[in-house]
Length: 257
Image 1 (cartoon, rainbow, N blue to C red):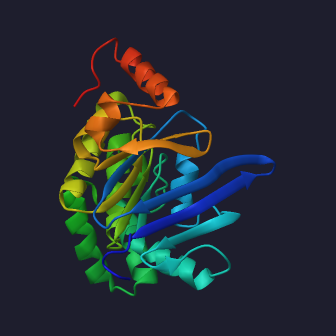
Image 2: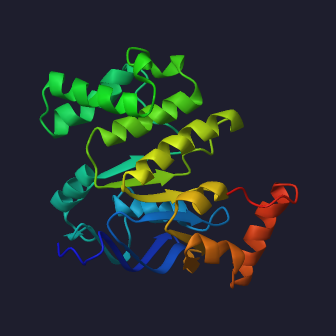
């Protein structure tokens, strides 16, 4: 891939569930190292869009290229290549309940990258340290809080040394007091220059971390821009209404920076 090319290129992507069109003519280029937050009302297509980037959802029309690799069409080998480079953290933690934290983190590197157990465990401990829960390595997911489980999910994704991290509403299933610890972990990743796409309603996170904030509604990207412009001068009426609802939910207080 030419270094000037975007690491993710989405061209005129359309997707349907039966007769319902969930994505309509979506175009998006993401530069390497760019941090993007995608927001919008429920049902706007946000999560579907990022799930298309690693082929968890198939698009019926349009093209997606990740690091120069064509993802759309019948390219099973390409899908496997892309998934090795793209980490994903879900709203639900999706940890294997019968495996310890350490085993959850070492499974994929050993089975798909051929790492030895010693190598995989060293990498896992490095990232568990990074997310500040190395002392939980030998526990099972059910023994952890929601915030700890989500940090394990982040560490597990990092163990594959991805070029891109996708976050699908990573804090929405957490109790409010758990949200900050997960957001702090994500901020730390962003500070390292990781290419990130994050679907979230945490507008304070968007303000402080994003290079670009994207607003989706009705399966389309309606507005995007740097945070300062996005929040202070929204142009589309639906974005104005969305931000107004967020301000109301903060009891009239400004969205936290």
